[in-house]
Amino acid sequence: MKTKGALIWEFNQPWSIEEIEIGDPVKDEVKIQMEASGMCHSDHHLVTGGIPMFGFPVLGGHEGAGVVTEVGPGVEGLEPGDHVVLSFIPSCGACLSCQAGMRNLCDLGAGLLGGQAVSDGTHRITAKGQPVFPMTLLGTFSPYMVVHKSSVVKIDKSIPFEVACLVGCGVTTGYGSAVRSGDVRPGEDVAIVGIGGVGMSALQGAVNAGARYVFAIDPVEWKRDQALKFGATHVYPDIEAAAADIAEVTWGLMARKVIVTVGELHGKDVDSYLGITAKGGTCVLTAMGSIMDNEATINLAMLTLMQKNLQGTVFGGGNPHFDIPQLLGMYKAGKLNLDDMVTRQYKLEQINDGYKDMLEGRNIRGVIRYTDEDR
Image (spheres, one colour):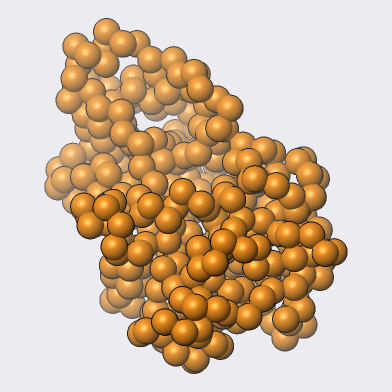
């Protein structure tokens, strides 16, 4: 079918809304009419080259929700009319990683940047006669998509799409960074560095896990104000301002858990994050850095002598097929504030405005909301 999508044809160029053609679902694939897509910072890394796909053009978007319209042979448990969220990490349930309980590290993830479909190894999307490389084999910056069943999670039909899409990446990643990868325990002090969609979700995870003090660090005053509304106990504009006060508040012990959710991770900053981490504490690096950045500044003696842990994480260390429905269930029960995380909604044609707002600190999360005009 022919539809449209937001493409980039080279690095450091704006998103371009163009006609694309999407193949029909084959074995193990699902066709989805998209209703909403979150605008995650990771898609901006496509623009800068921080996350290099295997070719151009690239169809962006990896955080979305919609309605199943068609299923291919071999698909069970999904049918037309089902409401679903797309998981940016596929989760097959059968590979060694999935069997070992690490479904966020499913072996199918090895092909996420290659652009070739899990089902048959072909390029399922074209533009101007050229193969298109969809972000994480999804491409939610289009009103339609055909994806492998391992990336599709059925959800409660009562959940608004603009809320549901957030758990396809940002909320699940941030919340899990606190409660899974960070393993925040009741009474622990937690610092969150960077208060966007992922950071605000980590903050809520820390609060729900029973953290004593939650220190939120972000240069944007408006975001710091929002952090207080979401449960932060202290806010700071930068690490330097935070370090002295965290030391005073914790009697020199510092934060037991530090979760780094900045827009772009730089190796030179890692030691400053470890500097506010307590002895025996854990610093979780959730933020994405450039794939070309392979140097980090770390005081190795302090890392050893203070027995600190430096932890990477993807998708919050969780299981998308379990965590996505669970988090939306918490939302329905009033235990997770997702409504206030959606700062602004945009049309697909406004995608560059949305990313401008994100980069200038105006949004916790911007969401593209599809209408009949887009289809």
